[in-house]
Length: 270
Image (cartoon, rainbow, N blue to C red):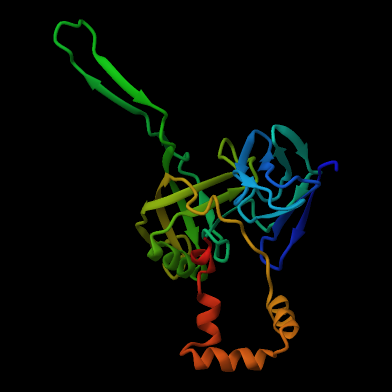
């Protein structure tokens, strides 16, 4: 069976997610999926790589570039297949999101010349009897930098909540903002802020200096799912029950539906 690939917009989130569907696989095939726009590329979660367990593999990308045509390249045991270009539209050309994509922080990117530094991994030693210094080196450890961001009152609250988790965030752009990458996973190491003075001293907006360090995606191997409450309701009905039955069962277990919604089911993956 020939391998075929496609990409489509799914979900009701803003921005929307992209579903990549791969068909014609053989069980045991190694599958890697990357998204790209212009010179930038990134791995799709749960496919870096994945091993096919059936003839079909579906993955969701909720970390990709916005407002730019994205092509997904699917590598199956060394052979590459590409989707048609697909664009995730958004009101702005950049945003910060939580790792799960549920929290979106809109901001105005202030011009601070985007200072960046590469973490060069070198160790120098003086060795008796040698004229020159000896160097030990390994691959550089990514970048660090600082974003100057102005946020509204609502987005300041969202940003505070995310910073309070101390978890990495995802910086997504259209891939065409000077030389800023389309996708970067960043951990904010410091976040001083002050009220914006641009409207006569009455503003609720804040200006942040977000010092960040590029990090690995802690969820790189976890496949993203796209389910809705309607999907869940339909499933419950197939089991011979109702949503009310489920609510009653949750209460009998000492929990609530809100507890169920908040649970991190990724922690249950074997």
